Image (cartoon, rainbow, N blue to C red; front, side, top):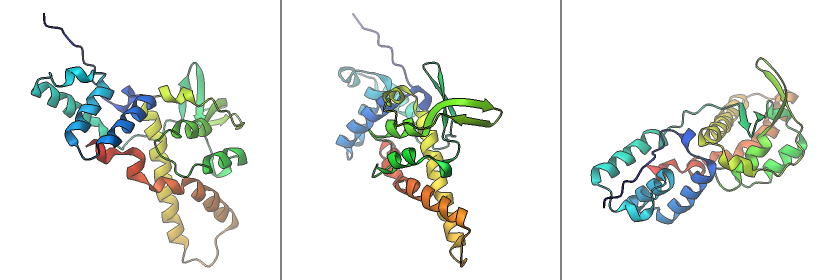
Length: 219
């Protein structure tokens, strides 16, 4: 008797949770130089297809699944989602990074790198906090209190996570360009110095771009 297998192929990062992505990255690191193994690991984690069925897949089916995954895995054009609802609670992204509270600033900078790893959920839990007031494009979020309930972010889809990471990366690039443009000036305004000092220190680890998202190894 032939057993039918249903294969659910994600069509965007919105179909993949952070937990699933981290599990995938952990396995991919074990097969960095084996493209065939990486392809099998991707299908196993992202499509939920048990490893015992992989070898029995027709070649055309395997290639179709791989192509469907590659259609979005190289996408880096993901916007920042300022609001995320988890378990009925609306969370907002830190509205002003330059005025981040000392506690939030301190907890973020304790990480040696800011990348898509086991610490990323903790970083998201700092950057996103429950919305207090909201009017049009303006909003405020709760003051950071060192909440360690970060596991809720493991079930949030990757379009949210990558949107935040890409936003921070682009901000880092803008800050670096801004700094270079002003290096010729004898003196910077005090408020600009403060913003560069604080924001620059927070964003510096994001320069580790390829390691952070491992997209190169996914191709």
